[in-house]
Image 1: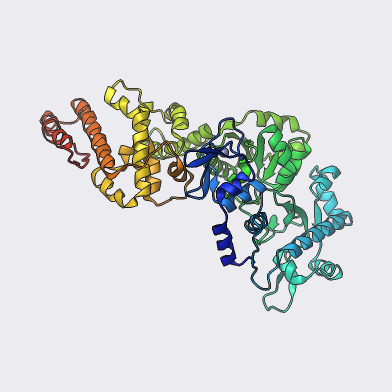
Image 2: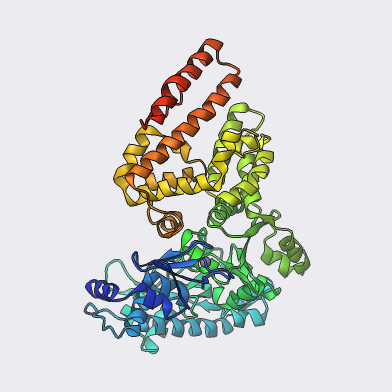
Length: 552
Ligand code: ZN
């Protein structure tokens, strides 16, 4: 392993502008540098490198991080690999902790055993018959290097005869040490094998499917230094070119689905490692800026997985859609039965991500019951608030229709009141962002602000403020805010003025609303109007922060 202190001194000796600048063209822009984002296709530069913070951030697709992260994402390398790359770029010599290897033995073992699995399949007629029966062509078997792993003793005998070192075979996840520490056993036995490649094209593990009704249908290699389940996508190395060309990536549920999709000509198909799509997959999904099509089973589990993935993808700003295959018909079976046309038709008719999420969320509630409807509204609003303001605005009417509510519930400014309208103006939005950035830079001021206003006063940016309160400073939106040069940090005096004007606006708006409150007694209305007109507003005018009180 690379010594940690050596990684630290490497980090201290490199500059992010040099690192990023050696891969892409950077232009100076104020205190920062700008470029067209290398992670998503774009014409206007929204990719920013901050030398003072030593980070990069894309305002278009939301990627960001430090020098090491940049090399990892751009070159599709693992963490240690990108450290090694950076070190060699800067003539920096790393020190390694004793007795560790650079995984080259583990890689060699994975390759060798993969080739042996392929050869073994040739001699195993039951396994071959199974594959043919599932409709998998010889061409696909070769393209995906599908193999067969026999009994455990044979695996051990192969490793020994090929002189492959057992400790490194353990490191590669091929075998494991038995509990009593006396010997080794093969992790994968008597299964069809699917080699799993890293995006850069080396074998990092295997998936194994039983053909003898073993209760575990699929078993994957264990998590190793090379094999990280939550980052990998099966078939990506074969699909990559097609993903870039077609600007589409199809994510399906199983390895066999991927093989069959490719066989039917949909060579942009990949699958997760039997686990849900996670945020760790997002950097890989962004490459080539494709639309993400989720092609899942229409059963309960598939539907739930599609909802979770659609929510994550849409919040992360992905475009794409969902296709749920009708009950019991997985895409592999349809293609095997010669129904590729039907698959193509389903893929043409995808449901866009955001409407899918809105409809699914709404459908989980009984909208005829007012209380349930209110719960549904809360859930849907929370989701909408996590989208970017412009996207959110575009989908408010869809959300309102799903719930059978007026769009005004979601804060869409369709009313004619001029005070309310002025809240929506960009000048005020910028001011809100400046307040948020100030609080991001000076967290000690947060309490002062919370003493006088609540989160709702941040309107469109309420979600951003909540992230700040939760201390999620690494969240892309907050990182983006921190290096956005159009948003300035305020002085304490300006912050005070801003709060005064927010509160003034709030109370002026109240004044207009109070006469129209239907269930408030007249005497209370008169009292409140007097209180605001003759007490609160004059105090605000004098510069006193009158705490926001929702009773008024
Ligand atoms: Zn980008």
